[in-house]
Amino acid sequence: MSLLKTNAITMQFGGLTAVNELSLAIDKGEIVAVIGPNGAGKTTAFNMITGVYKPTKGNIQFNDQDITGLKPHLITKQGMARTFQNIRLFKDLSVEDNIFIAQHLHLKANLYQAMFRLPGYQKEEKLILEKVFFLLEKVGLADLSREKASSLPYGLQRKLEIARALATDPQLLLLDEPAAGMNPKETEDLTRFIRQIRDEFDLTILLIEHHMQVVMDISNRIYVLDYGVTIAEGTPVEIQNNERVIQAYLGVDEDA
Amino acid sequence: MKMNQKKRNLILNLAAILVLFLFLMYANSNFSSYNIRILNLCAIYAILGMSMNLINGFTGLFSLGHAGFMAVGAYTTALLTMSPAVKEQNYFLEPIAAPLANLNAPFLVAILVGGFLSAVVAFIIGAPALRLRGDYLAIATLGFSEIIRIVITNTQSITNGALGLKSIPTTTNLWWSFGAALVTLYMMFAIVNSSYGKAFKAIREDEIAAESMGIDLFKHKVLAFVIGAFFAGVGGGLLASLQGAVNPLMFRFVLTFNVVLIVVLGGMGSMSGSVISAFVVTSGLETLRVLDEAIRIGPINLPGVSGLRMVVFSTMLMIVVIFFQNGLMGTTELSWQRLIDFFRKRFPKREVPSE
Image (cartoon, rainbow over all chains, first blue to last red; front, side, top):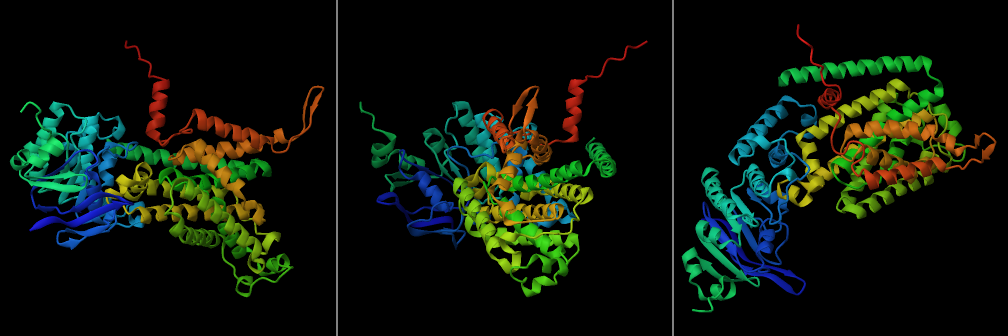
């Protein structure tokens, strides 16, 4: 049974078709990558799935429920979290608060209880803080909990963003180019980290990535987009040997 | 360690309140009525500054509707505290609408109802306006604030129109204004430090990220807007009762501008900054009144230029915006820990020479 299923979703901006009839099916526990040249419509697909855009056509099923056109915060509440291509942390807030805020959606206490710190809220806040430190420990940021998010080095900002997404309690995690701008050492670290959180948090992961080593190493299956059209789908080995993919994206060896 | 810090802060807070109490008692019996009035204004502007800071500084909504919310609070308080006889004197052009004539409530109830009605108005305005962002929101809220003023000017039988209301019982004194300011300060800190306050800050930092972390943008924006309007209404009520008279012209854009000045000078996103700058700006505007009058320096006689003090203050605002973009406090808060650290750095403990 698929956790996420998109049925021929299409996104048109005026005359431009950014994504054309994309049909993804992702099973529980899988790591699936979406690859393709720049402008292929990968991020647009992410934005449709997470509710930033409403698809022009088609529908999206998550956990057997239709989530097409739902607001982003409601989709997150159903168990889907994402990171952004160009890191969007709450820059001026502390590392700790960044993760605290990501748990606000599950808060049951109302404003009145929260303001006057009534027992119900205090109990919840204690659990929230415990989880904040659990997650910070996991990503190795516990010592930096009081630092401003923007003061962290790039690699750690990426990790904090993933930790923040984890704090919303997702079943499906969408990572938009997690390895962008990382050096080989950091990339290797990240690959290990993604696998580790998949196992530990019982996650399903959908990622966009340009770094082929990461993609081939980590993914169970790969979708290839080009100009909004899905040109191939399969295991890393199948994709590497696919004629069309090589032509459109991976590149042809001229000497061969 | 942490427990001790909490205890220490509590003791210091209580001590500070006690000092304030003693100061107010002294001021009440020794200050001239002019100075007492300025102190009252300072406290009321502190409330207004904090309420606007919650909306503009903490949630990042650029709203310019404060004068409108204050007007709602001021008129409600006035109508609820004036006696039927005084109302009859006021409404000589057109008699007051029937249910309002005999309406009367104690002062505390009156300002709370004023705040509540102002919050209701904010909710009605917020529902459409908060879908807008940035400059558009500023223009929309400014427009709504003017609409409120025009409605007040033209509902003769309810608000007495352009004539305004006079002989409002002047209940506001130092105890009321500083009491309300303290309660507001406490509530604001309670909100800002709670999970809801953090959600507000997240919206200020990055709306898209906040939404994708599951925060209901619309709900939280409306919440901040309505809470801010409530306290603006309370501030308006206190102001009406301090001045003993209200009229629609009091609630023009200049009033909102004064509050914006306080918030920007104090630091967008710092409640303590707003309080400090409310005192600086309000007392500053009063002391600078000298500039509006004729000045004599020896044999030279400069004629008074009315409005010169506003020029000086606007220049100050420009300087702050250009050179100190974060205002006095930025987004940090004044805390005991910060003060202690500051003094420790300034006056390091001298080594006691051992025998």
